[in-house]
Image (tube, rainbow, N blue to C red):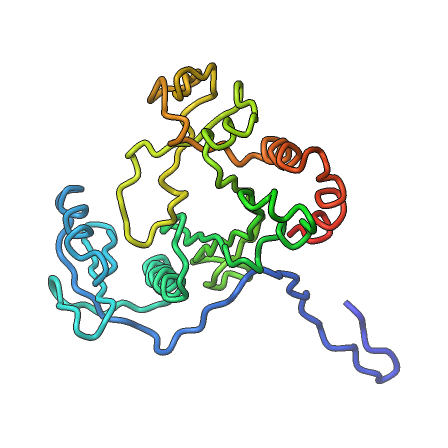
Length: 277
């Protein structure tokens, strides 16, 4: 504490600066919202309401009740109407914010990789970091990309205990070429891990195509156009034309080196790193 000396007042206390760069505080119009409430009697009822009201309501459990919050003015009331103060139901409020974020991202023309924490990849041509620095290798590298990936995490308690959105940003390495296309070009895939559509992710019209692809195992051998796998808990083999290489950095670098005939050095080590996120 700085004391006043000879009548000169101590300087005013200064709050610690906020050094958060990727947090967006949320401001609300009003202090409460209305929703319908029904008793919680089973997980099956909760899941059933979520399926029934998908797209029109946010359905969440709050203690011994299920809250059904209408998303539009013309959405029907489900259950008994109650009023919820934003300050008292922060997690439920941020569920509404998350739903608004999902709708906003879809409205912008993106497909989501995840809905729980809205995540999407910006695949606009001008956003491809690899294409920007490929130079005369652009045609050779047309099947591989480095895109920005965004994650929007709606937090009930962010910095300074405020409600808001944490924005995550990372680079995403993608190999569009199927394993068959790489094999046809002479690229060796033995020992490398691959992705395939396993059917475990339900179809959704706004889901990113890549979200359906799951890690299925490492290629042990290739026979008659089929990839025989190891470390594969779900499937033992998959068609080469229905599989893609995992987008891990070392694999991606190997593919880039192969496609450019070893002439990727200037692109990858110079311009690419300067443009890296």
